[in-house]
Image (tube, rainbow, N blue to C red):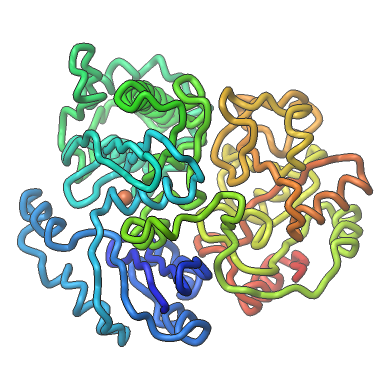
Length: 495
Ligand SMILES: [Fe+2]
C-alpha cells in the first residue's frame, strides 16, 4: 500500500511517500520546480513519486481546510473556500484517492515525536499560524500524543518574528534566518524595551499563557518606529531576537512544568531559530528537532499522526530522502581537489529533505584560510554578515566547540555553539564567536567517509558546508542543476 503525506497550497509545498509502513521518499516542491519556496505541488515531483512508487491509496493532508477557511474569515480575509478545496486542488494533479485531513499542529507534533525515539516527551510546536493555533504543548507517552495547552491567532510568536523580519526590509516567511544572523551585529538593549512595550507581553502571573502578542501582526508592522534609520536595522534585529528568546524561555518553562518531562521535542518554523535553541538545555536534558520542523516536514507528520505505529527510530531516520543523483567520484578525488582549490561543490546521492544542506547538495570549503569566507560569499552573492556553518567529525566536536548544555550532538545544524579556536577557523565563525555546527556521526555515510578522508590528509576534522544553490534559487536537485551551477560560477561540482 502506498501512502502519501502532502503539505501544500500555502508555502514551501512538500510530498512524502510511505511504502507500507516505511518512509521511502520526501522532497520539497521547489527542488523540482526551481521556484524557491514553491507554494504548490510541482507536477514533476508528483510524476517522479508516481514513477518510483506508483499511485497512492490514500493522501494525508497536513491541515484542516475547513477550520483554516473559518480562521481566514475571522481574520477579515473573506470566505476563501474556493482556495481551500483540497479535493479539487489534488484532482488537478490526477490525485483522486481518499484524503484524510490532520490538524496543522498535530502534524507538526507527530513529525517530531514519532521520529524522536522518545517514550516520553514534552512536545512544543511554535509557528506563525496553523488553522487557529499558533503555539501548542503536547505530552507524548508511548505512542500517544495528548494536547495540553494551546494559544490561538493572533497571538503568534512566529508572526511577530516574521513581522519584524519585514520591518528589517527582508522577506517575511522566508528570510527570518537572515534576521537571526543580523542580530549578532546589533545592540539589543537599545530597542528591547520598546518592542516589549509595543508587541509582546510576558505575564508573570498567567500560568496558562507563556506570552501574549499585543497587536495583530498578520499584516506586518512596517510603519513601526519610522524615526529609526537604516543603520538601526541591526539593533531592531538584535532586540527582536532578544525578545523572542525571552518568550521562548517562558514557553520552555511552561512545557517543562506542565509535562514534568525532561525530554523536549521542538517543532514548527520557530524551531529553525538555532540561536535560541541553545536555551532548551536549561529546562530539558535532551532535545529532538526533526530535521525539517516547518510546514514541509508536516508531509511526514500528517501520516505519522494517523499511523503512530509507523514511528521511525532516529537511529534509522535519515534526512536524505529526496531525488537520488547517484555518485561517480571517489572521496579521494574530492579531497585532493579540495586540498588544492579550497572550494568545491558536491551533489550526490539522495537530496536532503529540509532547509539545510547536510553533505549531499553542499558547497564545501577548507575552513582554515582567511580569504575563504569572502570567496564563498562571492560565489553565493550574499550579505557579508551572514555566517557559514562547519560540518565536523562528531567525536571531535568537544575539542573545537563548547556545545550548549543538553546538546552533545547537532546532526542537522539546529543549534549554535561557541568555537574554542576562532582565530584558526575564521570562515565558519559568526560575529558573536559562534557556529551553527553539524556533527557528522560514524554512520558509514558517504559524507562521513569524505570528512574522514579530509581529516586523514589534513589533520583538520571539519569542512565549511553551505547549500549548493544559485542565488535566489532552491538547492541543486539533479544533474542538470549541478551542471548549471558549475557553468555559472566556474566551480567544480563533484557527483
Ligand atoms: Fe506550521
